[in-house]
Length: 302
Image (cartoon, rainbow, N blue to C red; front, side, top):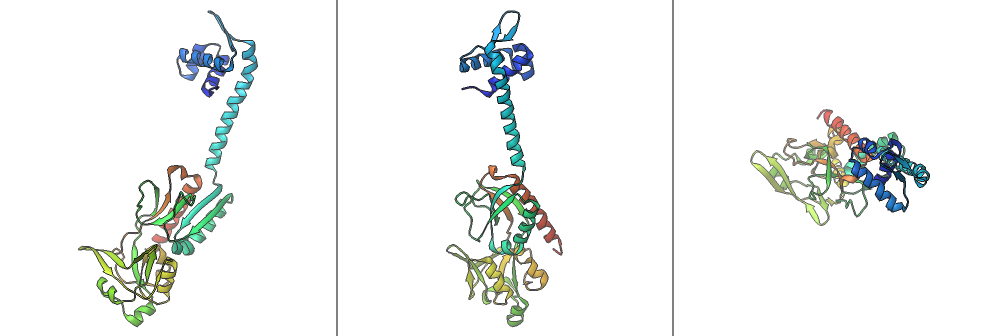
């Protein structure tokens, strides 16, 4: 088996005229240079240099082999350049999962713009509030709320300061009044969210006295966070959602925040990959693009 390093030593020695000169150019010892050429000769079953005490010259076999060795090294170099260019180019398939509410109502138009900026990119989207299996579903990345349970995953922060917020429509408040305290939520119709087999009906909040948890009830439950938000906008009850999900509704007056924004529990938004080899130019460009967009919308009126 011919080694690439040995080929490089052979070609350099042929150009430099001696093992010592080749060794200086390659920053190795003359003994290593001589050993590399001997190993190459052994692999080829041919003598490449005619050695004497005064000079070193190519043999007839060496003359014939030199052009092929140079071509081989050039081809390998061109291959490395091609790989580098491929890694730098934002192209190919980007398989991405995202939560339903944020995905449909915020991310989708942004992703349209992102793809228009990178026309060689093919998007494959999975929209679900269930935790995506990055490896099993062969995803390049997933946009997720909350802290990661699996520490082996690679997390790129998109909106670190995002929190959940309690809100309701003006119509609901006009008909039922607004809760004066967090504990009053137990007496209201709270629209709940289910993931897997778990219904989120214990709403936790950060208070001056620590974490306060309220057991809530209501007449509607869904595993789709977008549906829960729509129910809230329609006036069916109170919702506890990521502020990013309801920011547009809050600014349009379709929903009203019922408590101080800092009492809601943290809901950091992250771009998650299975491992660092998944951090392709497309994933890194998407992270930069989304981070900038989230900073922009959070900066407008808070």
